Length: 111
Length: 115
Image (cartoon, rainbow over all chains, first blue to last red):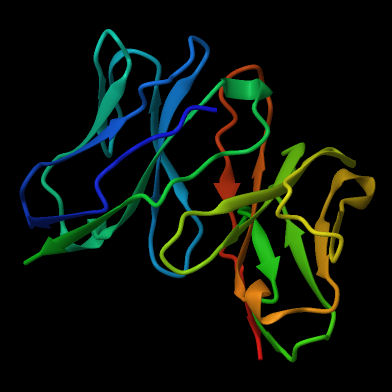
């Protein structure tokens, strides 16, 4: 399974757009890119998933360039409640048993 | 609430004791996963079930650990002869395989402290 690299931490202020980039140089043809969010003392929560180009849902956008060796999670107009750890994962879809988490990016949103 | 539930939420035990955790997945989900998470780290995969069959086990799952999912419903994770290094958050997740990516839904976890 592909390894991912993302910043350990990021700081932002309320109302700003936050972009978290993840590198996955060894991504395989069948791999999807998925982001999870985790608040303290809670389990991770699925945010968004994509394969290529751009995906948008009600909480985030995911940008994936043509070579798919990186991806960027974009959180529009963050609030204090977006303070959490964000994990980037790659995997081959339904045949994959487990998820492989890295250390994630700890996002701190300040007032 | 139809999410994944885990019990107990917290467990404090003495080294050498046995502990058992329970996970109730979302009812229609056929896959159930166990992960362990220590402070500052992401969750680490331990094992997963498809229905009642245990399909994969991580090398992290030593012989002191055993997991079951009788009848393909709830699951239990037992740790025998606990060690201080077993102190962690134990997370359970479930998913429904439908040919597309199996989004996993996580429970709140059981925090184990071994004294």
